[in-house]
Length: 321
Image 1 (cartoon, rainbow, N blue to C red):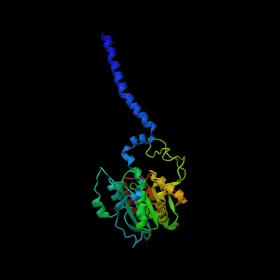
Image 2: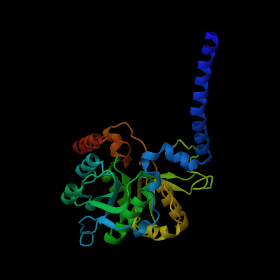
Image 3: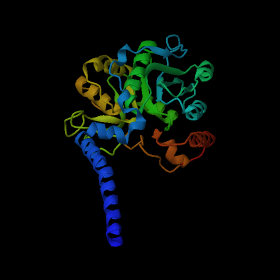
Image 4: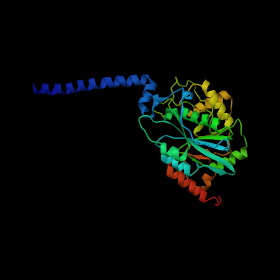
């Protein structure tokens, strides 16, 4: 009898475990049948379902004070950022993003933001002090970078129409504005121009665990149109205006740099190299004065690194390489 009771206990446990596991397995199976839902579960912190496609109807909440009409800049830097990245914005304002004359050319910087519902972070003091934030009424999330970028292009072409070039970049970037302005002046192509890290044959990522996963429903092709990495690209202002205007006829796509490539393809605008050597980097090259003097962008920098690299370059202007 005792032996029989000892046998029944494990059976009860097995039944309990089975009742617990089968619903979980069923739920997992349903998720696998729907890639987009499954993707949401792996990336739910990124506000996957917050995407709004009627971005042109969204209202500007904050716009910067600008004298672009009276004093047109040569280069406008548009920096995508989030509410919590004040330290990065401050580092950029002190370094490559500060308003300045470079080789006699005016360079200005604006930061792009959406809204942050549920996580209120006051920007009032920062906005009133620096007057360089462009904010529009859309949810600020990674998958709304397309909206954020179009917001910057929209504002710039309407308020700084006489600028020669626009650069879109991110808040974890180092930008050698001195070298960039020098190269743009040397190139002297102020129309039909688009450059950056060229990606002529990139394929969609079909791995649902990837941050950049794209389902067949979202994009059915085997390769994307040619585009430049969203870490940093430069375009003439006429191209920016044409991109914004044509965006109404191109379905929303959550990968911002690819979406801009789709616009360029429809406009029949080709990507161009700014230099015969790599100068835009999607990673962080090891720092040296001679290396960073001859590149335009470096990626994945902490705010203190941005300040350190910039100050080191400024102090070493007379140093020979």
